Image (cartoon, rainbow, N blue to C red):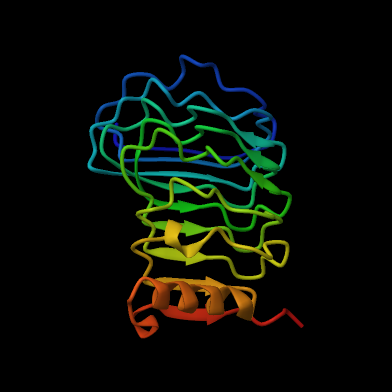
Length: 207
C-alpha cells in the first residue's frame, strides 16, 4: 500500500493507535475534514519512502501537535502539510526524530504558540517553514538553522523574529512587516554578506 486517504468523515473522532502500523511502502497519508479530536498516532508506520508526504487538513477539532508526533513515521525526508486545522499549539519536540524538508502550518488561524523546542531532536531541516495566516506570536529561536524559505504572510501577530543569525541559510523570506525585512538586511551586513542575495518580501494587509 502506497497511498492512504481518510476524507470527509466528521463522524470519525478517534483512530486506534494500532490502525496505522508497519507500512514500509507508504508514500502519502492524507487525513482531511474529519472529527478527530486528538492527533493520530503515526509512530508505527515506519515508511522507507525517500520523499514521504503527510497531509493533515481541515480537521477543526484537532487542537495540538504533540511531542514526538512524527517519530517513527518515516526514516527519510518528510514533508508535512498541516494546514487549516484547529491547532492552538505545537508542543516541544513535536518534530523529534525526523528529517524534515518542508513544514506547512499555514491557515491554522487559532495557532498561537510554537514551543521554543518544537524542532528539538530533528535530524535535519526543515528547509521551508510556512506560518502564514496563523496567530503565532514568536518563532523558535533554535532548530531553524537550515531554513532556506520562511513564509509568514498575513501573520500580523508575529511582530518580532529571532535574530536572523538563527537563519544561516535563508534565501527567501515572505513576511508581514517591513521591519522584518530590515532586520534580515542588517544582520546580513553584520555577517559580511550582501543582502541582495536574499529575496525579501513583505505582505500587504488584506482589504
